[in-house]
Image (tube, rainbow over the protein chains, first blue to last red):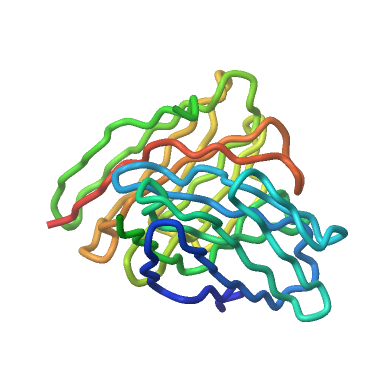
Length: 112
Length: 114
């Protein structure tokens, strides 16, 4: 049962553009929503995370928007750079001892 | 560098064999998580240990088992290997259990079953 759905599967953006990745969840017990960035041959690394009592969180060029009523959240990457080219995973974590449920991932390619 | 180490980096073996993957968590982290990453299933949670005790189980096959030792390192044992077990296996660690502790991922072990 896939509890976190992520779209799109792949995304191509020009340098300087805005990259937007969307996720939707089903389990209302989730209460922590991180985004991970993964480069080829590396493990996922935490990029930014949000709790459901906040509608938006910004860290540098990265922003999470969270809509609790719609059970959706999204990652916005402003001024996208070629170095941002990676696979991005949204995830959700509930109170069940911290295990993460991941979306399927989005392969982002930023063209120079 | 997350501070989580995994060995070996690559492992090639045959069907029916048994392998052991090793993970050393970040210094001070008590929780260890194992995840499997494959093209068709994505990143899937397998099992979690906290200070030597099993805390949560995910989609882990009965052929797979894990343990966390007194020095907090963990091992994932995969037996009677099948072609479909070929995947990247990640270990992650966090300070404590519970929802809000950030999980730091290791570089992974790439398992190829021939």
